[in-house]
Amino acid sequence: MRDDLIRYAIGRLLFLPVFLLIVSFMVFYIGRYGPGDPVLIRAGPKATEETVEQIREELGFDRPVYVQYADYMIGLVQGDLGESINVQPGKSVKDLVIPRIKISAPITLSALAISFSIGTVVGLIASFRRNTWMDSGFIGTFLFFSSIPSLIMVQFMIMLLALKMNLVPAGWSGDWHSVYTTNMIIPVLTISLISVAGVARFVRATTLAVIGENYVRTAKAKGLPSWVVATRHVLRNALLPLVTVVVTAVFTAFEGSLFVERIYGIPGMGVFMVDAVFAREYDIITSMTVIIAMLSVVSYIVADILYKSIDPRVDLTKKM
Amino acid sequence: MSLLEIKDLVVSAIKNKEEKVDILKGVTFSLEKREVLGIVGESGSGKTMTALSIMGLLPERVYVTSGNILFSGQDLITAKESDMQKIRGKKISMIFQDPQSSLNPVMSVGNQMLEMFNTLLPDFGGKRKKQIIEILRKMGIPDPERRYNSFPHELSGGMNQRVMIGMMLIKKPKILIADEPTTALDVTIEKRILTRLKELVGELGISLVLITHNLGLVAEHCDRVVVMNEGQIVEAGDVFQIFEAPSHPYTRKLLDEVPKI
Ligand SMILES: Nc1ncnc2c1ncn2[C@@H]1O[C@H](COP(=O)(O)OP(=O)(O)OP(=O)(O)O)[C@@H](O)[C@H]1O
Ligand SMILES: [Mg+2]
Image (cartoon, rainbow over all chains, first blue to last red):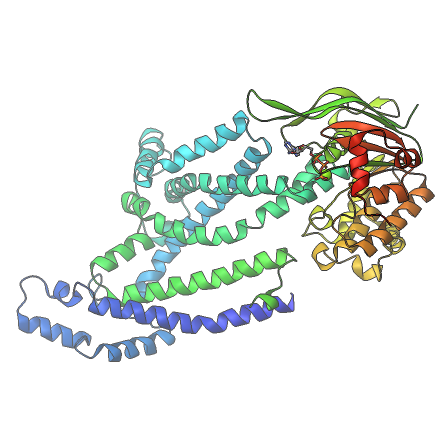
C-alpha cells in the first residue's frame, strides 16, 4: 500500500475519538434537556410525585448531568452501551441491539448489493445506448419503482408474492435466526427495487461524462475494439466515483427501511430506534448515535482510501 | 493513385431536429506517400473535423453528409466500424492537441502503449515491453525504464506528447495525422519534438499530416500545404510557391500575421 494512504488513514483515525466525544456530548445533553422524561413514562400516568422522584433517584437521573455523562462515558469506553429504561427495563442495550443488527445488516447489505449491481448494469446500458428506447425504457421503469413510497411498495409485494402467489410468508416470523429464509425476500426486494434508479442515473451520468473525454477518443484512435474501449477506458474511470456513493447509500438505506420493517413486522434496527426515541431511552439513543457516527466516519475513510488507491492522481500527503 | 484522397467532403452538425450546419463545405485534397502535408487555418476553420473524418471519429451529432475519403482505394466513409478498427492505429494514426487529457489518467503510460499490440496473448519474455522502452528512448524520454510505469500526471506535457507520438508509431502506420501536436507546449520543446517527429516519420517512410495555425512551422517542415477557412480549402500547393506568391487574400492575411524572422 502507498505510504501516503497509510498516513492519511492514521491522521483521520486519530481525529475519530475527538469527533465521537463531541457527538456523544451533544446527543447526551440534547436528550437530558430536550422535551420528554423517561422517568414519567416508566412511572406511568397514575404515579405520585414521590414515586417519580424515587425512580429518578434509582436510575441516577437526579445527579448533575456532567456526572451522568462521565459515568456513561466510562461505561462506553469499556464497551458498556448502557441499559434500557422503558422498552425492556434493566436489560443491557447491547443485548437488545445485537439481535436487531443481525437482522437489519444482512437485509440492508443484500438489498444494496442487488441495487448496485442492477443499477450499474442499467446505467451502463442506458449510457452506451443513450437516447434510444433502451435508455428511456430502463431508466423510466426504475424511476417509476423509486417513486413509489416504500410503505405502498411493501404492501404491494405482500399482496403479490405472499397472498396471491404464496411464495413467501405475509409477515416476518421468528427472531434473527430466521433471517436467511424466505423472510428476507420481500424486504430485500422492496428496498433494492426502490434504490436502483438512483444508482442507474448516477452511473449513466458519470459514464456519459467519461465517454466525452479525450482519452476515450485516443483509445478509439488506437484501433481498440469497442468492448476494450468500453471496459478498460470508460468503465474504470466512470465507476471510480461510485465507491464513495456506496458508503452514503448504506446509511440512507438503513434509515429508509423503517416503513418496510414496520409493515412487514421485522424486529430490526429502524423500528428499534424509533421506539427508543418515543420512550426517551437515553442510553439507547446516545449509544446508537455514537456507533452510527463511528461507522460512518470509518467507512468514509475506507471509501476515500479505496478511491484514492484506484486513482493514481490523488496525492494525499499534499492535500492535508 | 494517391495514398489518401479526400473528395468533396461535406460534414454537418445537427443542431436540433430541423437545423443542420455544414462544418466542412466540400473539402478536396490528397496526400502522397512519404509526403509532409500542412493544414493551416484559423481556429474553427475545420482542421480537426477534417482529421476526425479521416479517422472515422467524428463527435456525436456530427456526420459526413457527402463526399469520399479514399485510402489506398478503399472508401473510409462507407467502411464498417470493424474495418475502421483495423485501420486506426495500424494504417492511419492520429495524435492530438492536448497530450495531458489525451492519455488515460488511471493507466500507466507503459500499459497504454502495450494496448497498441491489441492482443490477449501474454508478453512472453517481456519482448513488447522492451520494444516500448526502446521507442520511449528514441522519442528522447530520459530514464525510459522508470517512465514506463509512470502515470500521465507524473509527466510534463512535452513528455506526454512524446509518449503519444511513440505510441501511435508502434504499428508503423502509413499515415500519421498530428493535430496541433505542440500548441500546448513551449517553443523550445516544440522545436525538439517536431524535429524528432520528422526524423522518425522519414525513417519509417510515413506520410505526415501536420495540422497547425503556425505558418512558420509549415515553412520549416512541410512539402505541401492546404489553407482552410470556414470549412473550405482556399488555397493548396507547394509550400515554397505559396509563401512566395499567395493567391488568396486569406492566405496573404495569414502570412502577414507571421512574425518576420
Ligand atoms: N462536437 C461538435 N458539434 C458541433 N460542431 C462542432 C463540434 N466540434 C466543433 N464544431 C464546429 O466545427 C467547426 C470546425 O471546428 P474544428 O475543431 O475542426 O476547428 P479547428 O480548425 O480544428 O480549430 P482549432 O484551431 O481551434 O482546433 C467549428 O466551427 C466548431 O464550432
Ligand atoms: Mg482543432
